[in-house]
Image (tube, one colour):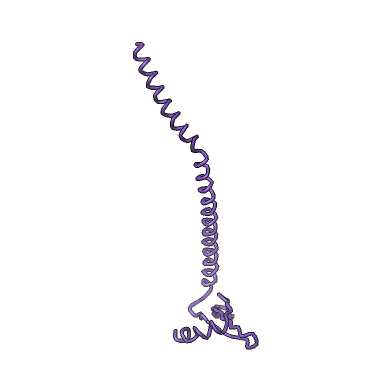
Length: 134
């Protein structure tokens, strides 16, 4: 019986020395591990900020899409999509807008603007031939 207990005791002491050796290895390199952890946590804060930006962007797009689909639900069979371009000669800026319009079932003219951008003449003149061909 005593040999069984001594065998168990030696097994437990061997395991304990193995575990304590692992912890001493970790404690000796704690500064390296903490530096790595601070790098990972900084990276994680960047990733979480990027994830929150992407999720906010997706929720904005879904809200915008629901707004557009609600607007389109009122449209009957006839609607038009209009691109418009105008400019002011004094400051040489050109403005481009896109909008849609339709006549409702109650015979009222309804239009809504989708986008509105301003661009310099050089930008428009370089690309106007491409736009007009399409």
